[in-house]
Every structure is written in C-alpha cells, then in structure tokens.
Amino acid sequence: MISKKMENMVANSSAIRAMFEEGNRLAGIYGAENVYDFSLGNPNVPAPEAVKEAIRELLDEENPVVLHGYTNSNAGYEDVRQAIAESLNNRFGTYFASKNITMTVGAAGGLNVILKSLLNPGDEVIAFAPYFGEYRSYTNNYDGVLVEISPDTATFQPKLDEFEAKITSKTKAVIVNTPNNPTGVVYSEETIQKMAAIMEAKQKEYQTDIYLVSDEPYRELAYDGVEVPYLTKYYANTVVGYSYSKSLSLPGERIGYLVIPDEAADSEKLIGAANVATRILGFVNAPTLQQKVVKKCLNEKTDISYYNRNRETLYNGLKELGFECIKPEGAFYLFVKSPVADEKEFCAAAKKYNVLIVPGSSFACPGYVRLAYCVSYETIVNSLPKFAELAAEYR
Image (cartoon, rainbow, N blue to C red; front, top):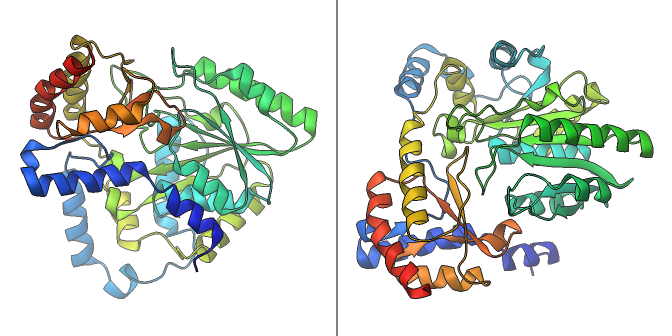
C-alpha cells in the first residue's frame, strides 16, 4: 500500500496535467490542429539561439568529466553563482555574492528546498488565492499548513486586511508570485510596501521571523512597460526563487536558483540548510550543463512580443464575445470568469468544442478558468470561432 499522504495527493492530482493529457488524447482522434489546448504553461517560443550556441561551445570546450560531474558544492558552480549575483546587482542595485545564490532544479525545486529548510511540523505558510496549486503540496511535503487569503476578484491584488488578520505566531513563510499564475497580475510597489510593513509589525508582535518567499518564474514576462518590483529591496527576510523555464524557454531543463540575502534572519544557517536540503531531497545539485549554459546567456531573453500578440488577440477576442477577464500585465495566462458558477461544468462544455481550459478551483478560486496563451498564434486565431460557439451556448 502507498502512504496515506500520497493517497491524498494522487486523489487530488493536478487538473492541469489531466487536461494536458486529455489534449493529447483528443489530438490523436481529431488531429492536433483541431484541438485548442490552453491547459499547460509550456512555452511555445523556442529558446534563444544563444542557448544552442552555448551548449555547442561547452560540449566542445569543457572537460566532459567536469562538465557532467557533481559540483564541488551542492549550491552549484561558484563561477555561475557569482555571475548571477553580479547580474542581479547590475539590474536591481543589490549587493549579492556567490554565497547568496543556490542553484536549483527549477523554481519548483527551489521552493521545496527553501520550505524544507524553514518549516517545522505545524508551521503555517500563507498564499494569496488564486495561487499555483502545487504550493499546497510543497507545504504538505514538510508537514506545514497552507493558509489561504481569499481572492479579490475585482483586481486580483492581495487582500491585505485579511492577510494581516491571518498572520499568527505559527506563520513561518508567505509565498507571493508576481507576475502571477494564473491571473497575469503584477503586484504593485505600493502593495509590496504595505505587505512588508504588515510583516515587519507582526514579526515584532510575535517575536518571530516570517520569511517572504518570492516565486518568480515569470519575472521577465511583463508587458506595456510594467515594472516588477524586486522584493529583497522592501523586506529583509525575503528569499527569491527564480527559474529560466519561461525567460529562456527551458522548462524541461529544470534550472533555476534561490537568492538568500545576507539581510535575511539567520542567513548563514539558512544558506547552509538550503545546500543540505538540495542534497537530501535527492537533487544533489542543479543540472551542471545547464548551469554553465545560463551563465553564458544571462543577458538573453525570450522574445515576448510573440506572447504579447497572443495576449492581445485572445483577450480582445474573448471580450468581444462577452467573456469577463482582467487584462494580464505579465506571464502568459488569462483568468476568465465562468458564465456559470460551476466552472468545471464550463470546462466540460468547452471540451465539446475541443477547447481545453483549466478550472479555477485548481488555483483556489472557483468560478474562473485559466487559459495559457503560450501556444501558436494559429491556435489562438482558430480557437475564437469555437469560443463563439461556446459563448452562444451560454447566451
């Protein structure tokens, strides 16, 4: 028999993955061009050409025993970590060094490393709905308790009054994700400043350390000149988790990093714990070839004009059909209000037209659905007549 914890996790397995698998099944029946799969945030823009060139150069120039071997530190290659620290310092006016960077197996690996390092059984982790559903599983991995802040469906900015009320002496971490999955909202500087002030006051009230964990796989995907605040500048006990999955279109390569600033409480111990957690969770170290690749590509970015065209076309098309949705400022998702209270019913209706979307209950926000527009432009354009048929069904 499998463990009781895993029985629950299997029973509540990802609706996103289930819908993606359904898309593959339907494509086999109707042809991929006739299935409009908006389920998975899998980048459709290829990695920059510099990534391919970096891989070729490394394979030709580097000692393969070293390149494909274990790193000396579980935190990763020191030269890679130093290069990332210097890049962040140049961009954001920070003062990081190699010791502040831990290379991770993507953002998900980084979140598990930092939660493993921080949580005792029963410690609370706060997340703002709607949020990436795996936060609950990651917290549960270490016997933590996820505390939800209900969504403000008018703006999808955090409800700070509820946030303040739900911080307790057991609160150990607060996860924020901006630009946000699934809404595409970017938390404003004013919001971050108010959040930081609340957390500072609560730390003093309870005489505890509360860590702000900034989950940032979509940092580089922001539109219309929107600025994404860098959170270490606003709150000392901030840990940043970053991934190159979206910024360089490398989701399957599983490469990212954690930033643990010197200003964070017990930073030396926390850095040491993160390195040990990397090892004992079975990651050992982040993929070595990809560490070297991202060092060579720190100034490269995916061309987000492709996503922006998809954003504009799908957003405007759905609005014209009568669907309700805020315009996303970042990431590559639309969070659309379901025309019926039970959004799962709406997802099932959409599937009749070979349109695959994800229920908002997967993100702790029922009554909405998520569409990932990181698909081909042709998929966007060809899906709109199907959305028109779907809209007509609910008129």
